[in-house]
Image (tube, rainbow, N blue to C red; front, side):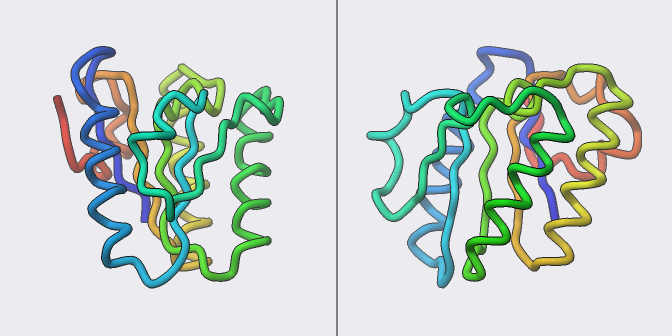
Length: 140
């Protein structure tokens, strides 16, 4: 299952995602991974959460991003949750059809391997494709 926290840039999505992941780690029985475009939030995360700076791995497009996620899943059989801050920047996408396609792929992967994905998206809910709007849990 993939869930989205959406809103324009500067609305507080990162704070919400950080609060969610730090709350969830207290009850998590498996591993929790936080993907970001930098390590700026390292000290805001519980030390049990694995922070990965995606920019360090040269992910250039949506297909490479999916491969990156599959790599994380393949090496961690205890994976319970993945949090994606700045989802669109991590995956290097912007077009609505790309968003829908990538969300669908990630939803399939998370359902297959039984883990949850929470992603922040710097777009207003009204800018999202209809098929993706059902995944929104917070709209700012």
